[in-house]
Length: 126
Image 1 (cartoon, rainbow, N blue to C red):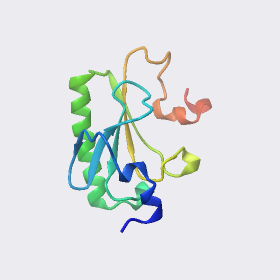
Image 2: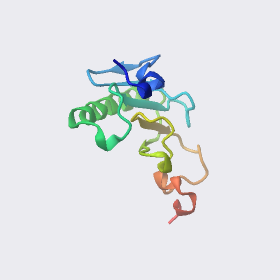
Image 3: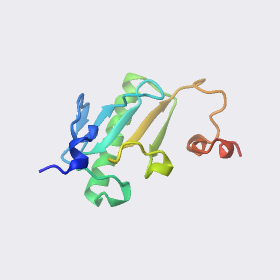
């Protein structure tokens, strides 16, 4: 029986699964930052990455590798950003764990130095 939060959760009712294993799956992001932006998501409804089990984290990382190889072949990016938002103050909008795999391309922004530090724009350049 699903609880109320998982009934309304888009990640508990996925569409367009690219690949999966027993505990996780990967889909394209509905609002991609760059072409090929993927999400890797545990099948169990859990909001906080730190509350995911060791087995779920292992399953997520396994799919992260698979997704990277898929994107290497399909889009040939020059790099990647990997991100997990934990909590609303960190930008988490869907309360179900999800890893972002964002392909990066030369010239997709003027100065990419700082990468994920850009979550606080004034701290990106150092």
